[in-house]
Image (tube, rainbow, N blue to C red; front, side):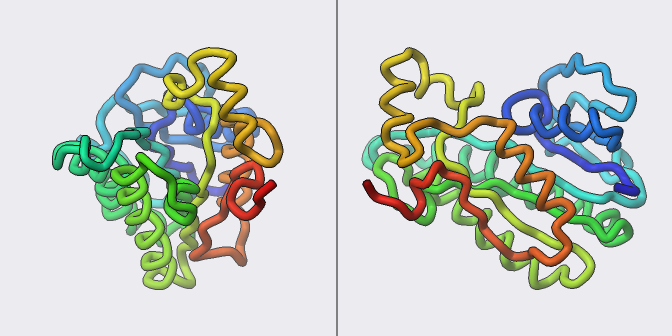
Length: 227
């Protein structure tokens, strides 16, 4: 890829897996995370800051892609959710993506780049206790399709909708062997996702020149199969 890739949330989970994947191939990455990153890749520029502290002066004039990885898993009964829960999830999942894409629009168009966002299977599937996060990720799906239309044909925009993935964010749901096995058994393919699998699909979408406006499920069969 001719220009660097901007990855928001590159310090852990899927963002870290994608950063490592790209950097090992010699692809330039600008990573933005609130946590310190100690990965020593010659092609990696790490910025330790919140996405809302990012400015246009932090970005190059052209980008080959933007990946927005931050998310939340805030699972509560609807009656227990406060307005602040909805606000926090919406800011983390949706408004952060909006902020960075507005900053990066000019650079993306200059680099004829690609955007990859992250939704969740819970938007299309409907799952109990997911009201807040599914609402926020539903906004991501709407944003994906809207920007894919508005920025075509110069910039492609797609989203990945995973099921449960083994990342630090999901650690509370996978805290012991019994929980992890129960989570795996809910999937037709009898395991949970891996961050590396999400990273591989994200990299593919960065270069897939005839895919735009798509929400692609990566869910171990859970999206369409019932056993």
